[in-house]
Image 1: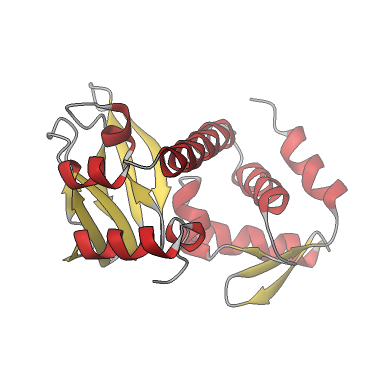
Image 2: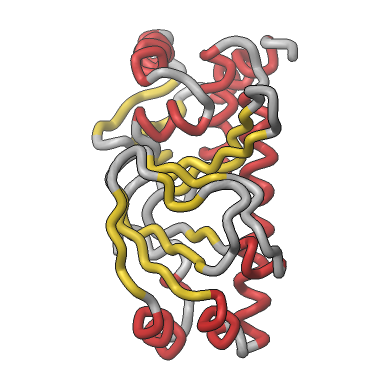
Length: 217
């Protein structure tokens, strides 16, 4: 598993139980893992690949509600006891995922400690979605990028921000070419430094914040 975002901090017993009860499935790029309105009968752990969550509000109004990559889960519906998915999940790349039935997932959640842990993960993810939605409504591409980099720099655990061009583009609804061009300009201006392999370092927080704050919503 690439990042083990969910499983890495679980006790070994729970890890093995999850893997034993789950099945591995492969999806192709552009495949829908499920559609809005489908019955919530399965939870998904993304092993490899990128998945976009989209909510259809009618009249051609579609809202991006999440972006998932290696080691992240789709399980809110099961945790909240919802009968239908409130959004669709579409593969942005080829995707490999572990799946578990909601029935087996309920058994997996028999530990109160584990349940509290998963609720904490879900709350953090909801915060991410809300924050990224605030960034997406900015008008200027460089403002969206600056806001995203500021947010991920605050949340990073290592020395660098780890985001690839396609991850940045999908999270804030921009084209990869636009992201690449704006990052080159930021690097030229001495705002950031690209370290290669999807790693970025902020050189001037003042410049980055001014780009984000200048763009009035």
